Image (cartoon, rainbow, N blue to C red):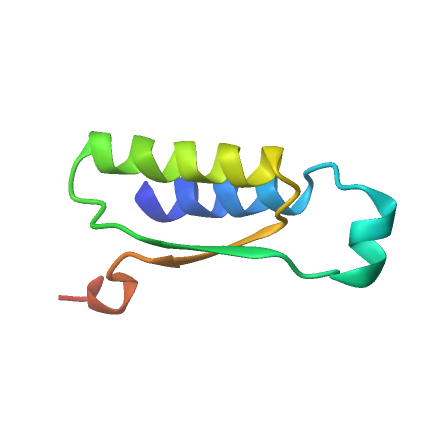
Length: 72
């Protein structure tokens, strides 16, 4: 469930509206978020980071959330 939510956040950021001039100069504008997604409040924090980033013209997110330990 968390993985799907994070993928939806990434899609929302990538589809965000950006100014044409900034898009030409810097086509990749990312934000870094490092959160433990063990509870719903942390997931909401990542959602807020994604919304704020999208409002400021960022179009990607690097999410460090322990996905390398999913199989554990």
